Image 1: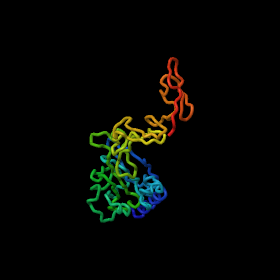
Image 2: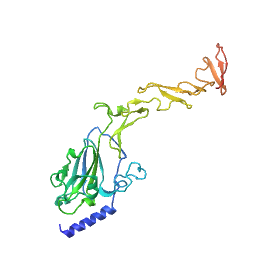
Image 3: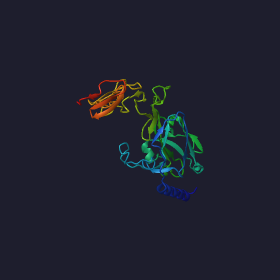
Image 4: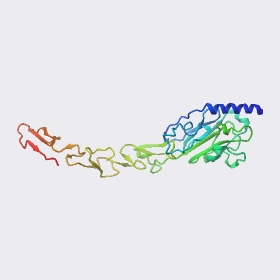
Length: 299
């Protein structure tokens, strides 16, 4: 390839990366998989290149996520970022046209990722010991927990890192089990990770709480009515383990009964009728007698 043709290739790629950016598709929350997955990343400039680190590369509105994102725009052309869970494998597949460039892939710092690696790049930072041709599996030692920055290392030919041959990979672990044999989130929640979280954690179902959703909160469903206070009497157990502290004019398990109004079985053998807000009348069945008119004073 002549110098003139190299310049033409670089110009066309710059035009593509400047005007043809894509919005990377991202799930905001991902659930932990019980089985590892193989990921194949195409090492190419012809598709999947984004530029703005937040809005394009992660498809996130920086104004909404301002509290967790850096207050600066990182316009770094790169392959769409990748998130893996611990145990996943990663394969890099380069297109045939790159083979003549003799490029390699390096594990770099964030600063080197933004600037692109220098020519005196350390050999022990190389991902592959040979030129990147065809498909290669990334050694698991480069995929430990945390964020890793991979970039093209120039050996000859044009510097393609500046055009987008960069990839940042975040590897996450899960904290959703009390022990290795325990069920995820005690079977009372989901093991999830938000796109900007460093690990997978339990997101509990209603009425459950705790790091592993192991605690049952009987008051979480707000069973007490009429502004009554709920007291969880047996924390961690399942059932009606709560008490309601009722206001003076209410009674019953959930403070739903109005004192002085008809309630189930208020008239043991007869029909109940409300007379005033604090009185009711019993009409006795045949062959039954008793006090018919009940008066309650409201406190």
